[in-house]
Image (cartoon, rainbow, N blue to C red):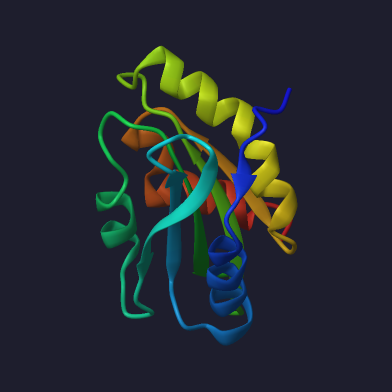
Length: 139
């Protein structure tokens, strides 16, 4: 089910800059004030750490995010996987969670090249170790 929410073109240009230009480490997306479109809330500089990213996820409001996840395989090979996050904390308002859930596909489909997807309802589900396990599987 789609909510009819549109994706602001800025979302795609920010994503292209992360994916191709490596100009940012992560992007956090939210709904516009009038809930009619998905907009970029924040981009993290390339120097940002994973902790910076998680720290920018609000405690009680849903968000979507894309993070350029770097990790090292056991053979020492370095990898990066662009990872899509659906952040919907347990404490968020039900109506907001439903709107974010029904709007996710519009954003997710417009971002080509996502390697992994993470759903988080509390910080333990987006902890680095937990995401690393999911992202590095089958890499």
